[in-house]
Length: 215
Image 1 (tube, rainbow, N blue to C red):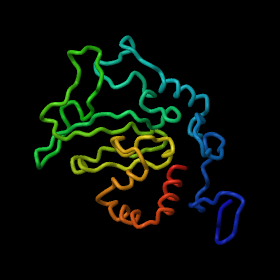
Image 2: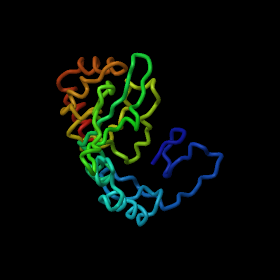
Image 3: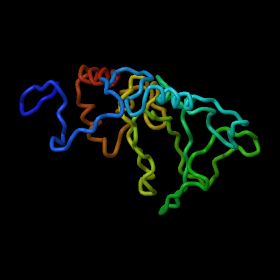
Image 4: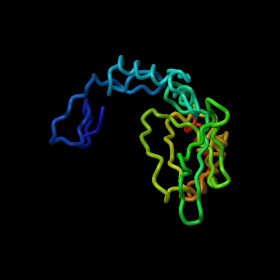
């Protein structure tokens, strides 16, 4: 059901009424509120299942793994509560800041934690004076690009709250363990929101936390 000029209609209303609606590639279905391995309709269920198997495939040296790596399958880091979701796994990112210019370290900001030979293990250099851990994010419809250039070196893009009920470790580094502490840890642009939260009654705080825990 949807609203149109104050009346209920029995079907969806196009935001562009003067243009013909393009039919979907596959039949539309009601989006489920839970977690599952069903296609969203952009590809067939059969193709989705094949792609899912590739995402979950575990690789070894004979398959081309290495020379440095963090995991042997995409699903090792993105698998909560279904394949493609976020997880408690963190990755180490570093960079270099001289007070004026920020640069990734040569080879990129990601420090791989594993190697096929101990002599080539990646390590943080003393020159890498910008360091942070970041949790593995969900790849389920996120679509937000992290890299915004040197001017965003002190910024973090906000992940969606959808699926928050599956997360036991919070914030970008996974170091915060409760919803209450995660709210208090926000700063800068979110400082007024934190102040508003602190002014809530205990009952209102509990209601807000209960809502966040339902997402």
